[in-house]
Image (tube, rainbow, N blue to C red; front, side, top):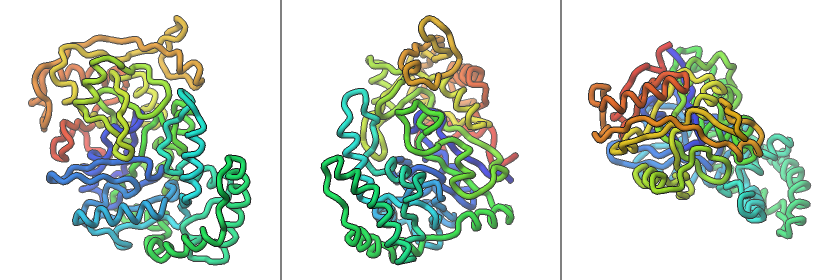
Length: 431
């Protein structure tokens, strides 16, 4: 048996929700290990669409334990609202099948206010494209050792001291931004009000996961966003505020690196990103528009249209190295149906120099020009295919070309949002 980490190998929105759901029916535990409710996973099960942000994708599967790890920043109000939404769709969620790390930092209303104020103060290309949900400020408080964590809600004296320490910093910042200060007693009252509703989910999840692993349970670690939004390895500063790469699965859940057996990189058959920042293979013409329309490229959480472009093999190969990806799950191949000619970014050029990776410098990233290879497209439909035999020969050729460029095999191929429209090449749960 193997424990599997699922990560995005591009800028997020690669279709992780469907793949995690496909894998979760064979897993015993599904763990969310980073990010917050700025990420969205859309699941389509028996014609019903579930849109999740904080809840692990396994929550829609009966008999699975879902865990929100310590690497996640949790907005308790948003989480409880999400729980009520999925309950209204007939999904049972309670402390018996959902546990939250007691040391997970909380997102507070002041974090959202700061997030929005900062983004509003930026202009034009300087805007990061934050969702305004307080993720960044909450992570800042975590690393500055002033965060309020879930377990603090059970300790009134600790909570009072933590709020004082937090506001000593933030009220000075709020004054500088011309915003109203936060009143400590009012914030404490709000937290005390929600505490009885959220604390029943709190637990020592690192211990639960260790016990599950020792008992031979299959654990699926679920990431949010994508590698190129990683705070260290992404297109900084146009990134999210956490580590999105596979190594974070261990840190963000309280497990050692030995708990990870297989890393699956979710990879779209073309490329998209939301928000600002470099995008070497972006298409601003009719082809890009067509990809967006056919792929329904709108953010699950924000509804913002995604920027679209050709498949970037340089970017994905870099993600494969950084994450230690064993195989990829290729999604949305059907969006390319009917295109007579396709292009793949196989290299980069900067100031006349050819390079094989995306540089760390934001200035150099902005000057990257794609070097394309042109391949033949196909007219037949790939949507809903469940075996290689059902795919057009030229579609298979496209997939093999991608494998060669990214230096990793396709382990899964998704041909529609429906869970069963999946071609299994290699089972990630088998070592």
